[in-house]
Amino acid sequence: MTIRLFVVSKRLNSLLFLFVIVGILNGCAGFSTFFGSSGPNNGQVQDMRKDPRLKGVQFVNVDGEIANRLLSKRKQNVFPESFVNTAKSGYVLGAGDVVSVTLWEAPPAMLFATTVSGAANNGFAGQTTTFPEQMISGEGKINIPFAGTISVVGKTPQQVETSIVNALKDKANQPQVLVKVVANNTASVTVVGEVSASARIPLTSRGERLLDAIAAAGGVRQPVDKTTIQLSRANKLQTIALETIINNPTQNIVLQPGDVITAIIQPLTFTILGAISKNQEIHYESVGISLAQALARAGGLDDQRSDSRAVYVFRFEEADALNWATPPMLTAQGKVPVVYQINMNDPANFFVAQNFPVADKDVMYVSDASSVQLQKFTTMLFQSLYILKTFVPAIP
Image 1 (cartoon, rainbow, N blue to C red):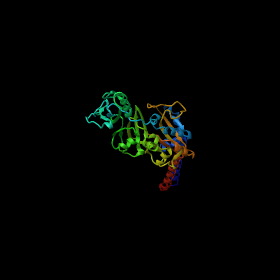
Image 2: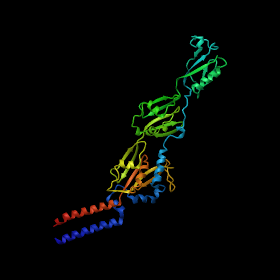
Image 3: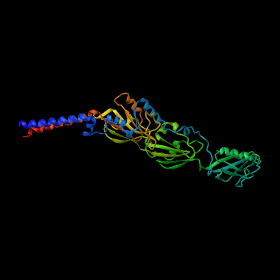
Image 4: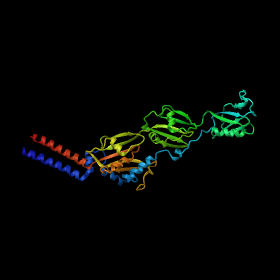
C-alpha cells in the first residue's frame, strides 16, 4: 500500500512540475492559449506594431491634448458659415408663381377710366384696376397693359411694383401698384424622412428657419436624441444632430428656396469587448458621448480581470484628425485605422476620458490583466491537488 501511494505521489509531482515548466517556457501568451481568454493581452496588442501586415496602422496614447483635438473636431460638426450667415431676404418671385396686380390711378384717370371688371370708381377716390391673375412665364416675365413685358424673376413683390410704376409714370396719372402673390410655387422647402407628414413648405418674407419647417411637417416621429437632420442646399450636404440644432440657436438657420430637409434615424453604436461586465453593442444618442460614458454604459471594467492600463479604442479615423507619427495606411474610403490606448490606472485620465469622443462603429477593447492567467493556473492546480487528496487514499 505504501509503495502504491509513493508511486501516485511521484506521478503527481512530475505532472505538476511539467505544468510549471510549460508555463515558464511559453510565458503569458502560452497561458492565454492554454486556458483561454477574452482576447489579446496588453503585450499582444503592443506587438501589433511589429506586424508587417499592419504597417501604417497608427498607435496613439491618449492624453489631454489628443482628446481635446478630437473633441474640437466633433464640435465642428455644425452648419458651415455659408449656411449660418445667410441673411433674411424678402420673398422673391420665380417662374411658375401666380401673381395678381392692382393699379391705382389718381383722378382724373388717364389710362383706365373703368376697372377691368367694367365698374367705375368714385372719381374723388381715384381709379382702381385689378388685372387678371397670371403665372410668371418660364422667361420670368409678366405682361401689364401699357407697361409691356416686365421681368420679375428674382425680384421681391415690392421691386416689381416699382418697375411697373416706372413703366407707367408717363402714361398714367400718379400710378401706384400692389403686387400680390396668389400662389407660391417656387420659394419653398421640402421636408421628408422621419417626420409626421412629408411636406412642401412655402417660404415668406418672414424668413422661416429650420425648426419652423420641421414643425410645419408635424415634427419628428422618433426621439429627438436619436434623430439627425440632413440639409441639402446648392449641391451641398450637411448632417447635424437635431438635439444640437435645438440646443444651439445659431444652428437653427434661415432656410433658402430649394432646401431639402431630411430627418434621419441614424443608429449610432459602439462595440465593447474584453474584460468588462458584458461584451455587447451599445446604441447612443446622435449628439455623441464620451469614452467615460461609454465605459459606464457597458457596466465598467471587470475589477477581477481587467488591465486598467490597457483600454483600447479601434477606429477608422478621418485622415486629418491628428498629426500622425508615421505615414498612415488609408482605406478605400480614405480613412486611417487607429488604435487609441488610454491608461485608466492614471487618475488624471478620468478627466481625459470625459473629453475623448466616441465615434460611430468604434470597437473598444479592455485586455485581461497578466495576473488573470496565473490565477487560472493556480486555481486549476489547487483543484487538482484537492481531487487527488480526496481520491488517492481510496486507491487499494
